[in-house]
Image 1 (cartoon, helix red, strand yellow):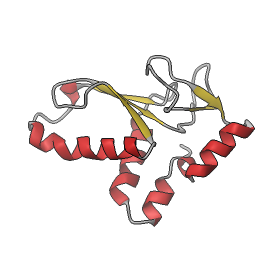
Image 2: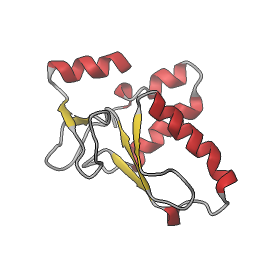
Image 3: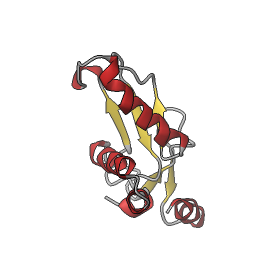
Image 4: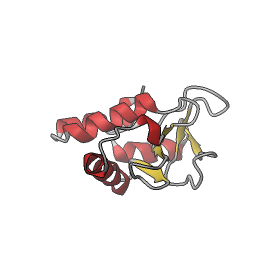
Amino acid sequence: MDIYNCRVIDYATHGYLLEAATVFILHILADPASGVWICEADRRDAGGSDSWTPTVELLERLERAGHVKIFGRVDPGGTFAVAIDGYRISEGPQKGKRLNARKTSDYHAPVCDDADTKSGKKRHARRA
């Protein structure tokens, strides 16, 4: 996992430990061939909407900051997907590329940038 380009270190050094841990965990949960994590309703805590609210707020905060893109409605009863911007694909035909969550409009067809191109390096260097 390439944590230096996903701002985990930046979050942690500035005291945002919850955000750092969340991005780190999303990298672990994401599909290595796409950089997308699918959260299904039957896998979540059945504690009701009150227990789910902090998670929703955290994911929305990460989305506003441009680190993830959420597809679908984030609620206790639904399935949604989270695309992790800058995720380095490690399997499949896109191997070695980085997920560009901002350009992705359908999580079934994620848009990737070449990790070694000038534009790819420049875009991810700004986030570090």
